[in-house]
Length: 189
Image 1 (cartoon, rainbow, N blue to C red):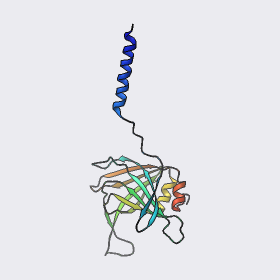
Image 2 (cartoon, rainbow, N blue to C red):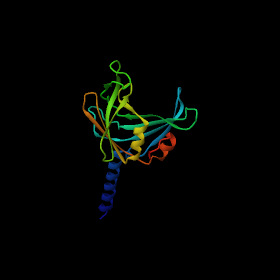
Image 3 (tube, rainbow, N blue to C red):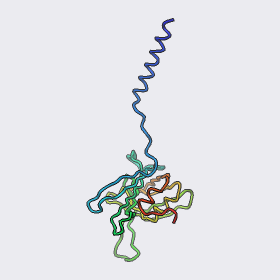
């Protein structure tokens, strides 16, 4: 009869040990725009907003990092009002670079661009050429593109990696009040 309490205690100890061996539970990535204050020797203080997304079609190789949208906004202008400075899609894998002839100069000069397709909610895809970063793992987008993205619930972005394989990313767009205020961006345009 005394075996039942001893058996129950041994069973609880095994269950407790099994849970402690697993370690602490990892929290999911932060949802919504994450805001940080930064300082740059050239621009001074500015605000960075970051939004993590997910890969729908991952790049080959190490895809442990999540794609993100990064928006920098600062008050380094005469009006001292916050202004949009730069928007960047961070992929983490080198992107395919296309050389595009500018509209102003014909036949003598080409600029590096990343061809991007993006879809807002379930609408038709829009194609744009964004400027690649120096290491080619990210691309800058204009303020107009950000304003369109902020109106959507989901944004799906497709670009090619350096080998020509498609990389597809999705971003669930949260409330944009903080980024509108901090960057002088109007999602209702």
